[in-house]
Picture 1: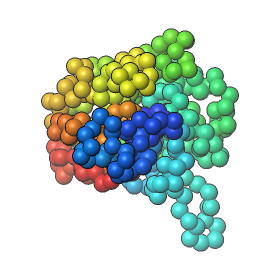
Picture 2 (picture 1 turned 180 degrees about the vertical axis):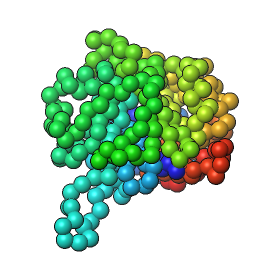
Picture 3 (picture 1 turned 45 degrees about the vertical axis):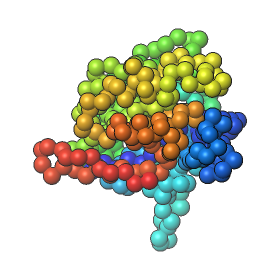
Length: 339
């Protein structure tokens, strides 16, 4: 089997973003208040409805007891507190440990702030393994703040790309899960753009366990044929849902940057996921890393309806997916989500 929990579904800044009074953020902050309709809507239109979301991160497990994270967002502490599966159980008898964590490891898709800063939450001398690409680990090595993660306790392991490897538990025993990291088109972290781009700066992950496959690509600047092939074979597929359209932040007056400038395809662009993954019928398809400007976050929006009609689920915090092992050599339909 394979269990997956969405710890956070939003892009950097979260939803609502702390300094934004844009219509979507107002809807997430204030809920179904009649006075928070988007100004372009007519007076009798239904008020915008949107659930708040923290910054993107996933947890997955092959046994429901030992968990691995994909990215450590700045909201990780709150995400752990909201997720009982990631909490240390209360002692049942004398001598049971009062500190600990079910988290066995963290896989980083890159060194962006919203993917890595949450590592500092895990600095209280709990052993786990940290995996990243060579360029990602180099960025962490260059920042002395991350030395708060004692290297004698938290192992840093460089990922070999396109090479499946078994994910070990803390004691070195097999978890039953196999991970494969692969490079996807992206860009350097915002703070390191002057250093130039590296071929391994943006990763996706394929996780296999119990005859099921999870593929996670929270950031992507171009959908390649090899990525489409990976999605086609997956049971559960998380993909970059940052922007609905490439220029939406420019049009809204939120930023001078397009989606492509930020290293993201847009959901409905000619080069986006709705078009390129339309023929991938096998996986449950989920949009994640969704920017607060994206109208797909509004539950009663035309954009939400369009995404769902195209076969996509819009991720939200706390959403759970359970993928049962197939009864025979052929895998069946992927499991359903539970908010």
